[in-house]
Amino acid sequence: MKQLSILGSTGSIGTNALNVVAANPESYRVTGLAAGSNVDLLANQILRFQPSAVALRDGTQAEALERRLGRHRRTSVYSGMEGLIRVATLEEADTVVSAISGSAGLKPTYAAVQAGKEIALANKETMVMAGSLVMKEARKQGASVIPVDSEHSAILQCLLGHPREDLKRVILTASGGPFNHVPLEELSLVTPLQALRHPNWNMGRKITIDSATLMNKGLEVIEAKWLFDLSMEQIDVLIHPQSIVHSLVEYRDGSVIAQLGIPDMMTPISYALSYPHHKETSLPSLKLEEEPPLTFSLPESRKFRCLGLAFEAAQVGDSMPAVLNAANEEAVDLFLEERIGFLEIPLLIEKTMEAHRPFRIDTLEKVLEADAWARQTVRRYRQEKNKRGG
Ligand code: NDP
Ligand code: MG
Image (cartoon, rainbow, N blue to C red; front, side):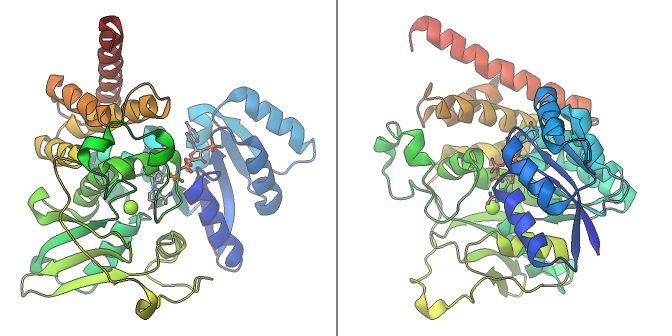
């Protein structure tokens, strides 16, 4: 019986992880849950899964939840970053599912690694910001970091049983998002609503916009670098709109191993929890004979500039990936609030990266310093532009 703490339990990954738990009550028990502001859903999850502790972002909402659960509750309620960290490091938790969206996931995930927990990692931003620190700490604690991201789950499976020195490169696939066939000239006018309509995956808002800009793939390239100890030259990206081949690994004799499956996060979430076993899920079999032809092409670098920016940030290293990540989060928020256009997302990130003087990342504080600097810089550019009337 594995005891799980699920950070981001009210989100797309979190609810799917709870579906996996509900389908396998003999294998998993939920001991901790953490969420942002969805009190109703968290309250239902508490009734259903009876965790020993939960956390909400905000103290007032945590109090409201306590009142709602009543005096006879068996669940302790915490709040704020301290509360998140408490849930991430619960004594009885074996595995922490890291599925908060964005940089808010960094501190609790790192705390879980420090506490020696096994991590089922969905929050790729943690690896982009602090991959070297996280992997170093995981090695020190003997804790494993198992990817939930479908591409990395695929790579993990394609690496199993092959001597590492034989590896030539990994190829991450990308669906291309909703604008794969929209010409560059039309992208400046696309709305958040259009960008939020992903053709294959049903995900949270931030990652859905990242999928439309291809920043998601850029973040995944950096995530792969740290998870699998790769050089940037060993990582390539292919557009594969059907999202059936989740990623591939090429060996030096020319063999290419791929992992396939229907595009449903249930599979990689379940695998991250049961690794190295493949447990039964309720999903239908992949019937390749009923699928459309599988196609592959190179990403268009002029159209999807975020992907190139992520490669650049990783090449520069040090604090640059954290700056890329924070500038992207700010720009995505501005786009969702309809304050900037779609093509301004890469422009703002690029300007911020150009202005940044990279420094060494050897502590979490340094990561947060880079993050705060990038956010301030993006906001300053926006204010300057507003003054000029842009
Ligand atoms: P969602 O937006 O659906 O869910 C985010 C979760 O994080 C919610 O439970 C939300 O709580 C919680 N949350 C957000 N901010 C805070 C905060 N400050 N403190 C506490 N909790 C917070 O996102 P997804 O599930 O789609 O994505 C989660 C992570 O997984 C991301 O890093 C994403 O890149 C990654 N991922 C997602 C995939 C997917 O298919 N969805 C695929 C691969 C990776 P609430 O709703 O209560 O406010
Ligand atoms: Mg992915």
